[in-house]
Image 1 (cartoon, helix red, strand yellow):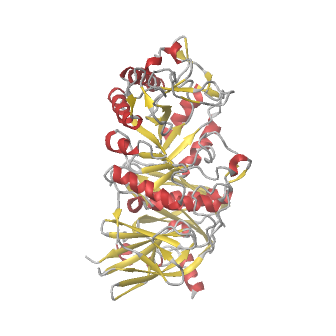
Image 2 (cartoon, helix red, strand yellow):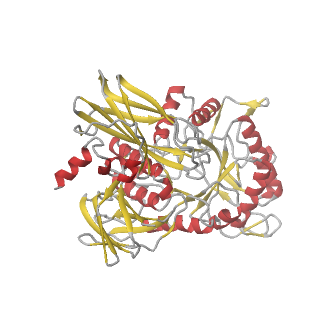
Image 3 (spheres, one colour):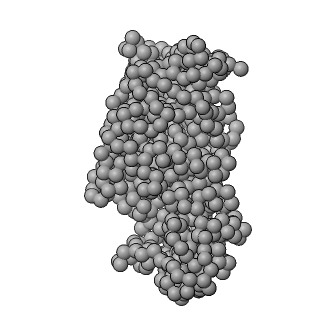
Length: 598
């Protein structure tokens, strides 16, 4: 029985019902030619890569695909299906020659939609399959997938293109340009009124003006937004010579003698002195510098950083400062003068409620620290942010993985990365983790750990899944009371070691039920500090059930761990208010969708 199921899944779109719903097949165009029925898929046997030209597309914009074969071939057929959730939008068949195939597809013009393209290449009775997602969204803040850049020495175009093309494959639609600036109070070094060709950043690393500018251009070519990083209240110790007044500062004493500062290593350019974000003169000064920055470089927005809770603070004239309450004041004043996109870091959630309710930000961004140590806390932060914004703004988490493992050279621990991403993505967030490398510490240029080829491939599937199913995961779903139970495997509505964690959301009348596998977890701390998280054993035919009196019309399943995220219809039974089905395979994360009769 198991082999028969696997053979059915391995057929090259043999029958529509093998992967998606019969009703979806009935909606496919009558002119679609039938794909081959007898070619068994061997993943990785024929195909080398599948990509799109952009990370996101405007409604009405054509998607350009490129498929690379492992070796030139005299002929072969490419079968393509475009899906929205479990419904087929279109099918087509193309002939391949050589080692590449390029083609275009224009998705439906509907705003804010995620799609999955299933691509099967068949030749001489052998077949291989790759999937890729497509995001059609004119507003990158609706479904933010945030990456970073942290190295800006002189680079040739090829070097920069390789970095951006990699991020594009993960559908990263916004890039934080980290520590690119000359000084916090003087972002661009000027020589005789013109941008210098080069300067040193705060860590005394070389920054090339042309590298920053060209990276922005490459990001725009791929449909990505470029975000200029800077603190909202920081300046070098020499700031007074650049026109900053010490009386604008934040002080640790009401007498205005001890200015708050953020100490940095001795070999760096300076410590950072802190200023009052609500001080009008400071607002005008820093926003003026940023206006010049945006006039010089075509950034799309300002990634505004902070430093978390600083304790009791005062102005120079002895007034107590509620630091978190100053953030909306600064951001709104900046937005009036500099109408660009804004994103602001909430370090450990500090100030997030005020930011969500009062500030003009595209989405909410939380840097997660030790006050939110466990997997359950990641979901709690995302849920809290949704509540603060009235379920209006999505969330990106800066959550640094394998923190102390990265004190020495090595490799990221795959199970830890995938379990954390599973929790974040299933909860409706995304993870700031991908740049030239992958983040392990709050200082983004740190890169002791490398990403293995296996993890790279799995992460691509996770980000495809995030995009393809964004309308279930991140399109402002509501909480659902539907609770899953297990039989052979313990299923809990809490994140517990040794169990499968299940929670559910509701969108457009559908219940979306997530299953995250902690049955073999060695720790419930999401950061997998020393890289010790264990790989879960793959479990097959996992019987689960939910209680509902509503008549169910269908249940379908998708997982980033299986079949490239393709959806699959599941047999189910409904008796006495209980709906039961089997998850075909459970590795890290499964998603089941329950739909109801009208």
